[in-house]
Length: 68
Image (cartoon, rainbow, N blue to C red; front, side):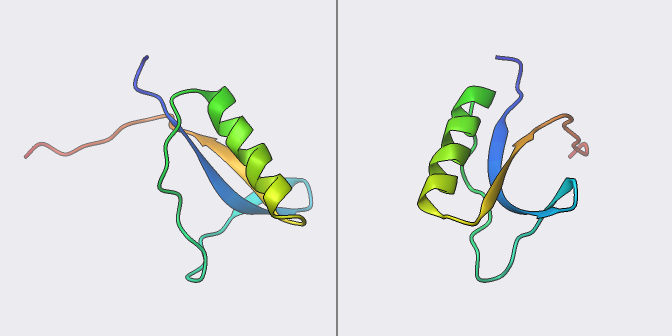
C-alpha cells in the first residue's frame, strides 16, 4: 500500500460533471477504503439503497503537513 485511500461522497450531477456537496443534514464521509474497488462497491451499494442519488468515489492524490 502506498498511502493512497478512497472515500465515497453523495454528489450531484451538474451537466457532465459531479459537484460534491456536504449539506448540514447529510453526513460527511467518515470511512476510508484501501482500494478503489472497495470504494466503488460501496458507492454502488449506497446508490442501490438511495434511488435518485449519485455517489462519487474520491481518491487521495497528495498529502500536505506542516512541521510541528
